[in-house]
Image (cartoon, rainbow, N blue to C red; front, side):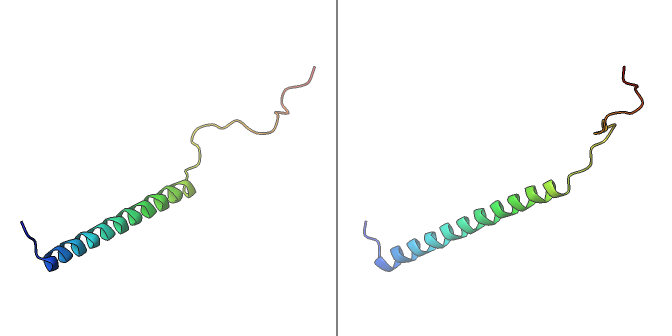
Length: 63
């Protein structure tokens, strides 16, 4: 089977454009995921419930 050279060149160029578009899409998705993770880390919620104080309690006398 003989394929015309211009047809073959057109097919190759189309595939090349598709591969570039896929690479750009994956790159954009990766950047969006990274941005989303860093954004969630920046807006971390404060802890809920009771948190133990950092300083020792002065209410208990030393023996």
